Length: 348
Ligand code: HEM
Image 1: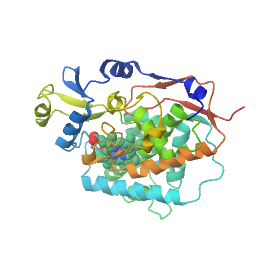
Image 2: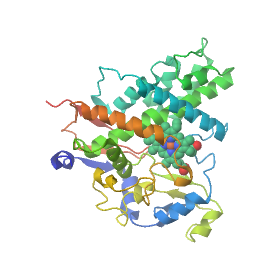
Image 3: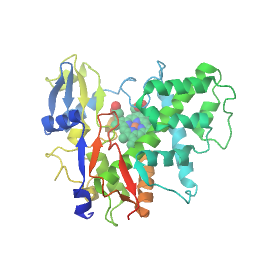
Image 4: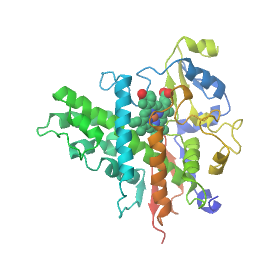
């Protein structure tokens, strides 16, 4: 366990609507959130809802239609494999020697991963990974549109990532624009989300006990601050049959944020205790859904976990600490749940 004094001095402050969600509904299984939306946090009902049917293309988190164009499952699968290979190749190379991870996280970790994995790619593609674009999808699309229209487009080259080569092979303005959008779609969860996950872990528990595995630390961070804190399913005829409190026209918002803290499922649910994962299997623990449901679990999780563990390991192997002056970690109401900023510094 970390020295309690370091983590005890930190307070995680959820945005008011997230705090109200936890305060009002923790421990309840099914509850109304809006006139047309029912929240579900009970693990048995969540299980039945997620098993009832596959996510539709607009419900999917990663490969929803790109500017109105559907992404087929075979294309999604090919793109996921491509970025998976890019990640594996990046991890197989020696790590850069002079890594400086001080500064605000998740930004710092994001920049590190972007350079590690996509560092060889042309600027026109790498610029799509700017974190400021995350906040405004419209701006992202403008950057993509401009990039696709510029003369001198990137040419395929063995030095580029597989993902960049896919984009470089696109012919014609429309196809280039689509391919650049896809580049961002696939690379963003690798850089933004993994870095957010590690920033959350540092905030919740650093400094960690030397003997504690990175895997357990990441699994426990995914429990308390799951980046995918909600999973949406639009109204569907299967759902009222599962629970009569769900109406025919109700959308369903499944809430790992709540099931991950349910006192009926977890000992000491609010405490950061990575050692609980010595005895638990993340694939079968009831109510634990950081990567979705067993019927169609996140296709990217096998690259996310080693990458997150590597990044965490780099921080643990350095002499960096969470700034002792930082007492508050704010968690804004965004699609991607995480502490807005965690400052890593060198101890004085
Ligand atoms: C920390 C990082 C990540 C988290 C927390 C995460 C979480 C999730 C969750 C909760 C689901 C289930 C969604 C649902 O049932 O509606 C999911 C599905 C999926 N994830 Fe991830 N994911 C991460 C990274 C990635 C990456 C890096 C990729 C690939 C580039 C990826 C690709 C997918 C795909 C293809 C699906 C299936 C649904 C779809 O087409 O969007 N994920 N993920």
